[in-house]
Length: 66
Image 1 (cartoon, one colour):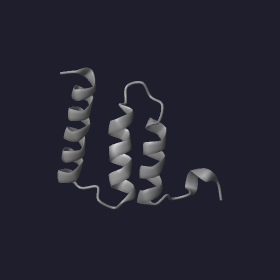
Image 2: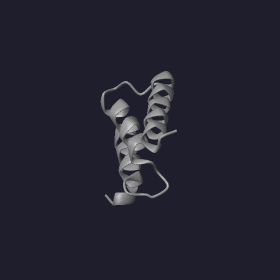
Image 3: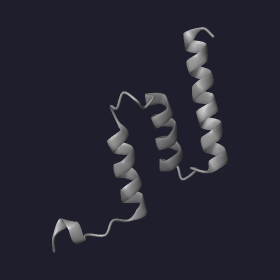
Image 4: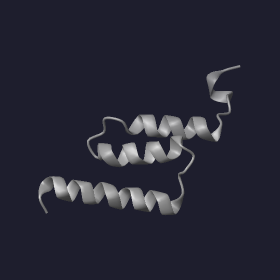
């Protein structure tokens, strides 16, 4: 069986996607960490994601002195 014919599970695909974002300059590390934490804890919902992103923005703004 070749690697091309292996069917991956949803969690495997999401894990690979999140891993592929590590170290990319266009992705904020704290945002990626928030998404990864929600996903790993089984709490990745639209509402929780929006809340986590808002918290990350707020943290960033405070760090920059806005």
